[in-house]
Every structure is written in structure tokens, then in C-alpha cells.
Length: 189
Image (cartoon, rainbow, N blue to C red; front, side, top):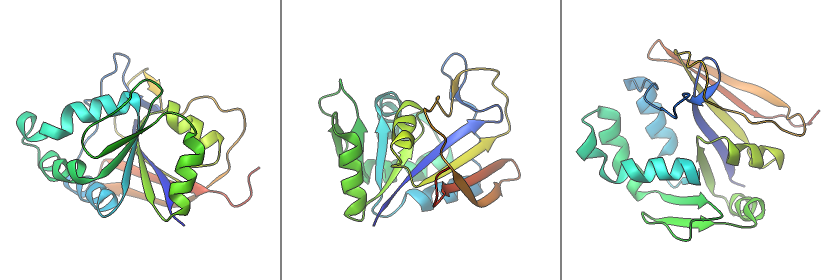
């Protein structure tokens, strides 16, 4: 059985982007970059909602033209090679090894997990909320960065029910970013 991992960067005050939609604050030091590459390597399927897809597909195909940062140069080829899924009701097709799912999202992603696939949901809050609501996310890897944004888009949207989790790891990268890794608890309460 595969699994679905929610991989997200957030500010100390719980936002995934600032008040003006900015995402210029994550600190990708060498330790966090190496961990990110290890997690995203192999035969993982990258999963995005439409908004995050637009940001990622606008940057990673030509990252070397925009950045000389070591992380960007190492991750760009991984991103281009990876199989990707975008969940969207409006997008009909996407490039870069990407399949679009518009309906039956929970069923399709569950079937992929049952076939042994490991999916990495990058960022986003609407898709993460929907998948959390339906019990599809198996693990949350939340990277807390040393910044207070004072507003923006929260990492978690309101849910209609509580989701019990258990902490399986906490770790500090580059003496500044803290990973909080949780799995769904066996018994939901």
C-alpha cells in the first residue's frame, strides 16, 4: 500500500503565504534541501492543487534561468522528471509529465495509493483540507520557518471534524527550520 504525504512550508504563525500571496520567506539551507531532495526522489508522484501548480509550473521548468541557488539547481531536474497530478475543475491539460484530475479525486488518489504509489502533496490548503476531510492524507510533514507573516493563507482550512494525529518525528534543519512530522492516528477521535 502506498501513502499520501502532505509536504508544506509554513510561517511560525501558521501561514503558507503572506498577505499579498508572497512565498519569498522559506529558508532552504543545505540540510533542508538535502532532506527535500531525498523525500521527493525516486518514483514519487507529485500532487498539486491548481494554485500551487500554476506557481510550480511557472518556475521549475526553467529554474536555472531564474536562480543560482544550490537547492533550485538540484531540485529542478527532479521536478521535471517526476510524474505529477494536478487536481483542478478548470484546467484541462498540463505539460511536464502531468495528469489532470477534475472529478472523483478521493477515489482516484485512493486507488493510486492502493496500487503502491507514494504521492507528495506540495503546499496548498484547499486540496489538503479536502483530502484531510476524507482521510486520504496519511502523513503531514510541516516545516515551520522562523518568520511571522502576520496574515495570509493559513496552512489548514476549517474542517467539519477533528483529525487525530500522532507525532512521529520532530527535527531541526540548518539551525532554523523545524519539521513536525505527524501520521494519522489509528483511532480517530
